[in-house]
Image 1 (cartoon, rainbow, N blue to C red):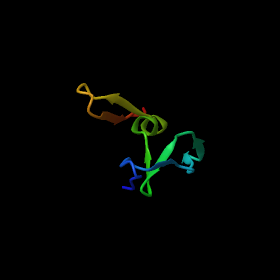
Image 2: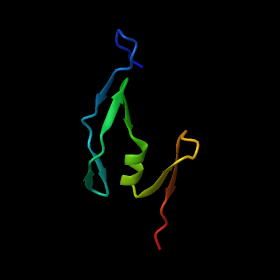
Image 3: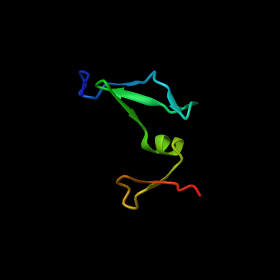
Image 4: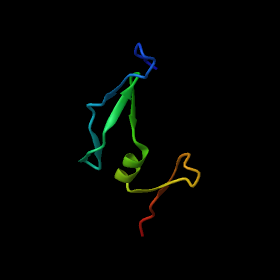
Length: 68
């Protein structure tokens, strides 16, 4: 990862747009050392997935929603 002189990672807001099924979705992405990242909750919700934080607070459980 890129570090500035303080030892902190360099991140930038990403100029990329996200489209799901041809519809532009408002999700803020960030680039870190050239790699693109999104907040897992925002991305999962945009993809119509169920998101819940794990009970120990260390991660998320993401499940797909079954359509009938």
